[in-house]
Length: 158
Image 1: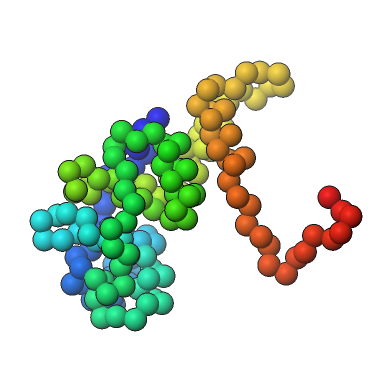
Image 2 (image 1 turned 135 degrees about the horizontal axis):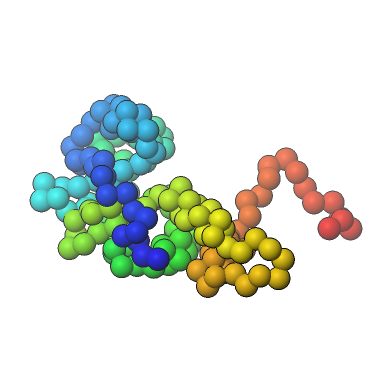
């Protein structure tokens, strides 16, 4: 499965000169947590998230965006997109062709793929899983588990 098969094609983008309040309002309006930032020629220049807009000082999107974000192409395997997102600790990745944003993949899109693969995997004991479902399961097992605040593992317990 490739990025083009799961990416969102109707991408909300921001200009670098957009004010922070305007960008915050747009994220709330479209019910998204972040968006690509594109320059005048439609070229990707950064990514911005609601956290960036709320926590970093500045007047415009340019002041708080992450410049030169990681990107993938439409033909990038979904497994590679998921691994990249885990390695770089990002929640969304723009899909770019010729420097222009053609889509975006979020962590929710990746989770949906794994859920769909799980539904297609054989449900009876001893059945052989499909290769794609097996790769998805392998990737899920490699994902780091977040530490739970306020809870410690007791010595001697497993």
